[in-house]
Each structure stands twice: as C-alpha cells, then as structure tokens.
Length: 516
Image 1 (cartoon, rainbow, N blue to C red):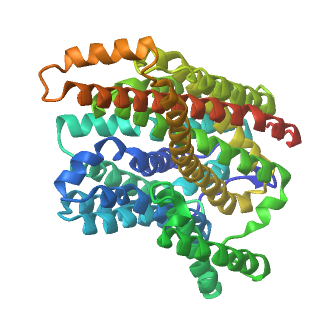
Image 2 (image 1 turned 180 degrees about the vertical axis):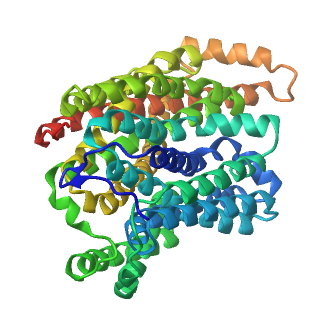
C-alpha cells in the first residue's frame, strides 16, 4: 500500500519514513551513475578507439549517442511515472541502464558500442528527473535545504569528476571497467527501490491517451537538435549536408511538437509549467548553469591535453579540485538555503562562477595545477550555489502534482545548456584560433632582430636534421599555433565568465519561494 504522507498545495508536511528516505538515497545514487556516465568516457576515448578499432570520427559517437538518447528520455519521465508508478519506472530505468552497461563492456565493434551507449543513455536518462521529483514529492519544505544540498552535490559533482574517475579506471584497469563498474551499484539500487519505495500508484488508463505523434515529434526534435549541436562544430556546421538536413528536420519537428503539445488534450510533455514565472526563469538559469557545468568540464581537459600534453591521469588530478570544492561546499549551501533568501544565494553563486571563470583568462602555454587551483575552487563553490537555489526556486512555487513533469523539463533545459555550450565553445575556439593565428603571422618578419635570433637558436637545436632552416621555420609555426590556441582559450574563459555576470539581473524577476 502506498505510504500516506500529509500534503497540501505546498507539498508534504511530515518527514517521510526511514524506508522512503533510504529509497531516496538509492534513487540519488542511480541519478549519480546516469550523470557520471556522460563524462566518464571523456578522458579514455583513445583507449576505447583502439579497443574497438574505430576511426577518429566514429569514436565521438560513444558520447554523442548517449547524450542524444538521454535528452530524449528525460522529458518523458513524467509520463512514465504516471503510467508505471515511480517505483516501476525507476527500477525499469536502472535495470535497463545496468544491462546496457554490461553490453558496452562486452562490445567488440564500434557499431555495437554506439547502439548500446544509446540504450544506456535512454534507460538511464529517466533516473535524473525521477530523483528530483521524489525529493520534492516526499520531503517537507523545512528539509529542502539538506535534500537539495545532496541533489546539487550529485548534479554538479558527477560531471566534474567523470573525467577523473574515468582516467583512473582506465589507467589502473581497462576501459571495459568504465561500464562494468555500474553492475553491482545498478543491481543494488534496483533492489533497494523495489523493496523500499512505494509513494504512488500506476495509472494504466494514461496509456490509452498516449500521444504517439507527439512522442515521435519530440524524439525527432530533440534528437536532431542534439545531433546538430554535437556534430556541427567538427563538420563546419551547414557546410555539411548531413548537419543541414538535421537542422531542417529539427526546425520542422520543433514547430510540430510545440503546436501538438499546446493543443492536444493529453500532451506527451506538459509545457504549462512554464506559465509559472519562477519555473520559467529558474529553468533558463538552469540552462546557463548547464553551459558552465558541462562546458568547463570539457574545456579544461581540452586545454591540458592539447596545450600541455597531459595524460588522462594528470588531467584528472587537476580537475579533482572542482569536485573537492563542491563536495565540501554543498552541505553548507544546502543548510544556508533554508535561512538565506534563495535569490541572494543564487546571485552570489552566479557572481562567483563568473569571477572564477574570468580568473583563468590569463593562461600561458605553461599553465598547470597551480594556475587552475584557485579558479576551480571559486567556480566549484559558485556552481553549487547556483544549482541548489535554482532547483528550489524553479520547483518551489509549483503544486506537487506538477513537479514530476516539471523536473523533466528542468533537467532537459540544463542538459540542452550543456549541449549548446559545448557546440559554442568548439565553434568559438576554432574561430579565435584562426583570428589569433592571422594576427601573429605578420610578427614573423625576418627584418626583426628577435625573429632572426629565435630562428638561429632553433637552427642550432635542430642542426642534426637534414634541413635545419626548414625545421626551424616549422618549429616557429608550431610555437605560433600553440600561442594562438592559448589566446583562444583565454577569450573563451573571459566570455564564459562574462555570460554569468550578465545573466545575474534575471534573478530580480524571481519571486521569493516560501520557506517552511
């Protein structure tokens, strides 16, 4: 029998039983696995590429297929919990994710690995919004500070430590264990949720109203959008016929989906939550948080690998600083969110994230752990202070009946922010590298004494080569390319930090959610 919990329009009034609290912990661990697996392969793609004999173009699909499938599933989670119940939907999602993880570890070709990664992302995607929905459905508002502190820690920590964890696992075991590591936790989470969680009943009648046309439009819309954003930078956007076709399909299906969702009696995704001002602004702020959350996790390994030549393990050792900062800060921010105006907390978080990002806008080709330490600490604290208040503000003025559906929309906005951010970062990086290269080339003038001195020095170093003069010119070109890359990264850190500072005024539009 479903656990009775006293509720009113503002949510539960009594603390859930110990069984339900343990079930919530299990759900949060499932969410952690699903988010972690987005980035856990990031630092091990070379090893996976060699293991399945994939090309450089094919291996990127190990991440792309997961992201596309996950972002399609996330908004469907509300519908699944209505039809199946929260317990069955979560257990089905977790078991599917676990079995797909086993399949990924056993894959012996890039084609099978891509398909299994898509299944893994699709099945695991539901665990993220379901965990959020459970938190707002079973805990009273007076406990939200601690609860959302845990949720914020998981949502920010998992993608931040993904490359670190993946680097260590691949270094000391093999890439197969990136997926095998999910098996035991996946089974334990499924058993715990099945035995302990009982908060609602399935409504099988909702299956009769399932909008299959809306479902197809949603899948095509989000799938082609994610594909275009992931593959666009590498394929020079609309210069690629495939990207152009995907963008056209995305545009057409988006119109069809929104028209269908707003007019159908039983839409596949209910968009009415955006009528609530706090949810609408909170979701867009979540979009911006996603840009930094996923963008910075992508940007740092790229700099450390391309410019410094760091290994996966060395990159992980640098990036663990953000994870530690988040881990230590999240409980404090969670408690503070019960006592401090959430809008003030969010404003401070936006400012800290922006400042911490701008602190890395003066990189050199020698920048390493020391250069990134304090900026990562400031950013880590700022991101936690952004995500915890954002989710509480977004869901805080919604009735409990709308939280499940709204949680899917909120998480889609954050993940879309990450996808848009990655696409923009890649495009801006290429653009600024070309710009700085063209600005630096005129400086290589043999009429300048410093150029001649440098070239003579290089020729002495390369005297053993067959043609030291040509080799010295190539070495100078590599130095210029390295400097143009560093300057491009500085531009990105500066502009990304400015984005957080510029969106901060949106917080003034928010209404103050009621505390308990």
